[in-house]
Length: 65
Image 1 (cartoon, rainbow, N blue to C red):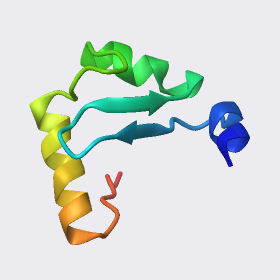
Image 2 (cartoon, rainbow, N blue to C red):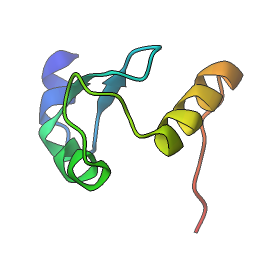
Image 3 (cartoon, rainbow, N blue to C red):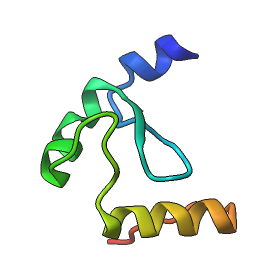
């Protein structure tokens, strides 16, 4: 599974309960750069709010076009 995440063309980011970024694959780098964070830093509060909402609801959040 780790090999899949690492080589995935899609962003894969693992975040701790406190919002700290624990893991990101190469495809995640543009997002982290846009957010101005790196691994072991906390997500920006606007992103963290969405992540915590999804975790609490245990339901995926989708951005519709």
